[in-house]
Each structure stands twice: as C-alpha cells, then as structure tokens.
Length: 215
Image 1 (cartoon, rainbow, N blue to C red):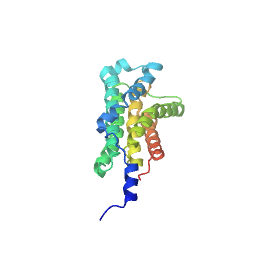
Image 2 (cartoon, rainbow, N blue to C red):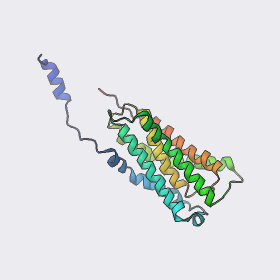
Image 3 (cartoon, rainbow, N blue to C red):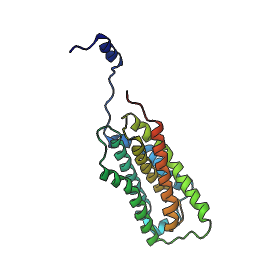
Image 4 (cartoon, rainbow, N blue to C red):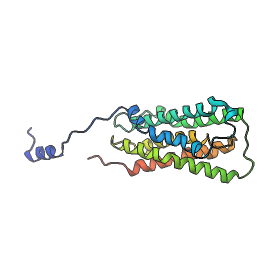
C-alpha cells in the first residue's frame, strides 16, 4: 500500500531532528547550581543554628549534604519517570515518594537526641515561617526541573511533578534545618515536613501547567 503524496509531504514538513535526551542523572545535575543556592541560602544569609557545635559537623552540615543528595536522587528518579515507557512500577514509585518522609523523620530524631532545643513560644508563627520559607526556597529548583522534564513529554505529569517537588523540598529543607534553631520534633515534623509537602504540591501544579500536548 503506497503512502499518499499529500501525507508524505505533511510528514516531511513536520519531521525535524531533535537532540536525544541525556540520562536522568545527567539532567538532574543541571539543577545543581540552584540546588546549592537553596542549600546554602538560609544559613549564609541569616546565620547557622545555635546548636551546630553541639551537633557536630557530621550531624549538622554532613547530614544536610546527605539530605540534599537524597533530594537530587528523587529529582533524577522523577526525570526518568518523565520519559514515556520508563515509568516506575507502583512499588518503586511508593518507595521514592516515601523516601523524603523517611529522611526528614530520621534527621529530626537524630538531631533531637543530640541537641534538645524546644520551641516554647510562637509555635504557629515560627512554624508558618519555616514552612513558607522552605517551600519558597525550593521553587526555583522545582521550576527548572519541570522545564527540563517537560521536553520528554511525560505521560504522568502530576506524579512526576510531585516527585520533583519532593526532591526540591528535601534540598530546601536541608538548608533551612541549618538555620532553624529548634530541634523539637513537633515543630520539624509539622513545619519543615509541611514545607516539603507544599513544594510537592507546587511541583505537581507546575508540571500540569507545562504539560505539552502530544501530536
């Protein structure tokens, strides 16, 4: 069966060569400049938490660097999810989504064991400050990651954007925990973890906004 000349002409007019996608990890590294800014902005612009010496370098900066690396890993996983045909299985997806919660909880409990700094006054004010500021710090990382991911024509943009938001939120919280002077779990697991969740919602919303129709 021959292809009609008109259809052949339409295909020829529409056909253009495109640059192949880089591997997910490589594309995730493209956000590292903004990730570094999100990590160091709060402690450099304001100050470092007062109990940093008591925590020691390993549990202060060391743990924050590991948390930021975990955030980049989640972003890389989301960038793989963005490629049609490379979507994660349900169990793997659940593991990637649960990772930020596990990391934040573990970091909170370890910090509380080594340095008990309760939040006695202004619980809601300080909580709102940490929640909003952490989520806002994550936005540039999430936005850039979504722009990178949109080129792959993700088939599940809401899920992919959620993962990008979780990764960006985890990176931003790694920086804000170095500024926040309180280690009380009720504060961290509500305000700081809430900032990560808010970043995840923002990531999903941005992904749906940038969704490109497949012709």
